[in-house]
Length: 178
Image 1 (spheres, rainbow, N blue to C red):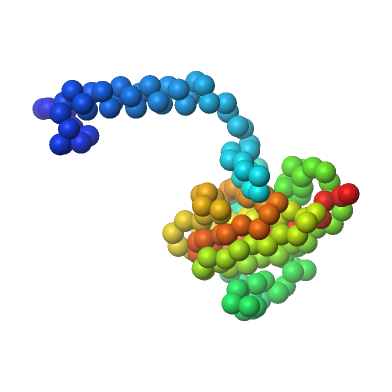
Image 2 (cartoon, rainbow, N blue to C red):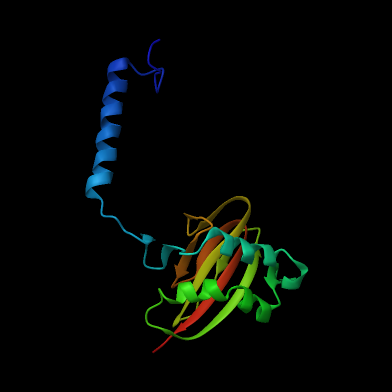
C-alpha cells in the first residue's frame, strides 16, 4: 500500500521536503521555545493561566449557575447573575486559588457571573484587574482578544478586551493595592 500523500497535487519530492520541514519545526518548538509553565500566553493586556482546580469543582460552579438560584437578569443586553452573595459562597475555592497567583495582593475583590452569547467587551478600570473564568461552554469555543480560552483556564485582563463565544463565566474583579 502506497503512503498517503498530504497534498495530492504536490510531487512526492515536495511532500518529502514538507514533511522534513514539519519535523524540524516540531523539534525546534520542543527544544528551543521556553516552557512558559502556568502562564501560557501573555500580552500587555492579557495573560492566560491554568486553573489549579479539579474539574468537579469547576463543574459544581457551572451547575449552580444554571439553576434558578443564580437569578440571571438581563442588564444592558447581558445576562448577569444577581445572587452575588450565594455566588461568592459557591466560588469560594475558585477565588482562593486565583488569589494565590495575584501580586500585589488586592485591596478588595468582587465576584460576578455572566452568560455570554454574543461578542462583548469586558471593561476594566485603572488600578483593577479582571479575571475571566469560563466554567461552562454552551456552544462553540471561547476567545478572548482573539486567543482561545478553555474551561480550566482563566484570562487576567489589565485592559478592556473583546470576548466571543457562548459560555458561562465567573468574573473576579480585584483592585490592586497601591
